[in-house]
Image 1 (cartoon, rainbow, N blue to C red):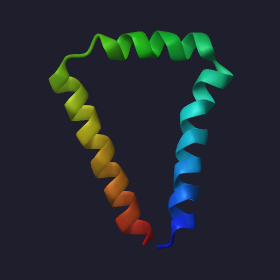
Image 2: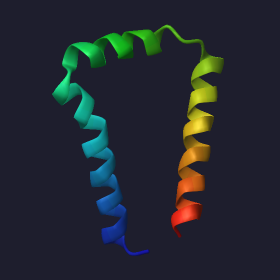
Image 3: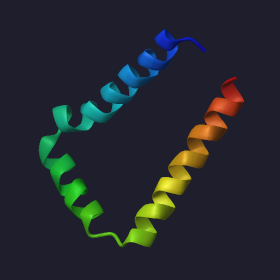
Length: 62
């Protein structure tokens, strides 16, 4: 993997992260406020699920 692949992946993350606030800022704000209400354990669980899904997707595609 060269550095251009890394920067393309970072650009894709920015596109995905910016999509919801651009399309529906009110919904994004409400969702973000709900996320702030979660406990640390719940946030860690969702983070772990996200990490596992990402690793599985990379493993499946590579």
